[in-house]
Image 1 (cartoon, rainbow, N blue to C red):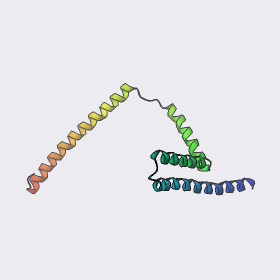
Image 2: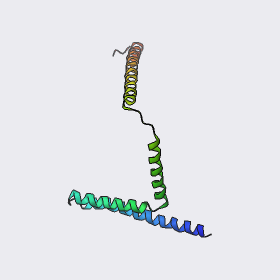
Image 3: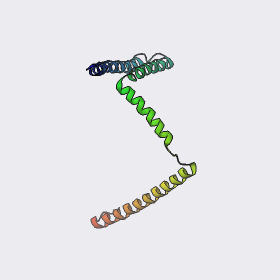
Image 4: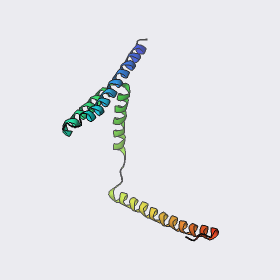
Length: 126
């Protein structure tokens, strides 16, 4: 029973935290608009501070912790990827370019033939 109460309390605090996050982000947008005559550097620092604060608060919620965990796991998985060598990447790129050029020529030819066939059938000269 104690665990259920803790979950409900954290869920309600999460709602408050998300409201604060949204208010901070909205304040950054509105403040940047309202103080448009101020220096760009000052406005950029203020927006970055608001976004940083919003991220810090959001990271303290359940969804924020899940997102951070997902990002860490994704980083680990990317390290496991066997990336192609430069030569393999270049060869694959050339094959894709050649196949694309070939298909473009085939479709261009079919289009030309179909235009002439339709023009012959309908009597409209193109």
